Image (tube, rainbow, N blue to C red; front, side, top):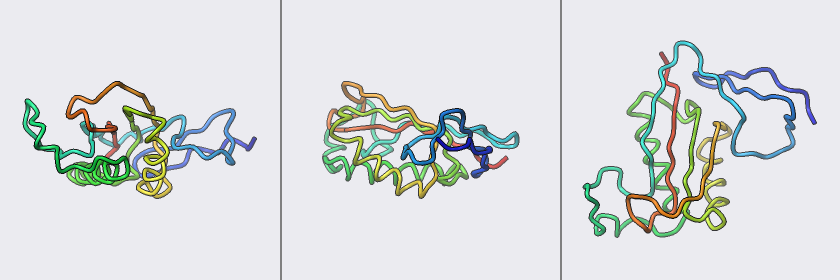
Length: 153
């Protein structure tokens, strides 16, 4: 076990570790992030591999062109997340929380974890991962990401 590092500033937040920290453990999340006082919170609606803008009620044909594999859907989801973050004046390192909903964790989590690690480029937000029976948008979707970011004040 390593010494607990001091809070580390990343974008508009500080990464917080606590007792039990071990720098040799590879993890896709950190236990806590404290937003600095001048930051504004940005809440991003769930992103998936499907088109962000689509009709409600849903029309299945709108989703026919989306990738059906985990890697393709993850590429789309992270591209959609980039668009939302940029529009809100944020960067990837401004993400402080990520909630991930999977329809099949065993099949898709490792693929998403690898792509997420590359996408964040070393930044690690707080995170929760859940398995659910399906997503509301289209039954062919494999996962959805809900994100909170801290924009510069």
